[in-house]
Image 1 (cartoon, rainbow, N blue to C red):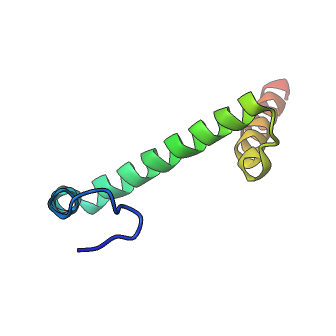
Image 2 (cartoon, rainbow, N blue to C red; image 1 turned 120 degrees about the horizontal axis):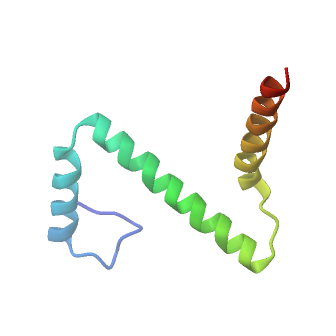
Length: 78
């Protein structure tokens, strides 16, 4: 088994990781992938904020939350 991005991990460890991953249900794997992706985006967003860099493509989350809050406020005002 070869992987171009993990050249420093021994084959027996990669095989064990794959075995553990495949032992999970598809739902567990999907959940883990979503949680991992969320953690990566959160870390990237925080790093960009600390460095004063524009959020760029990550700003869609903030925009979604802002619109959701505005929508909820509009419902309460009615």
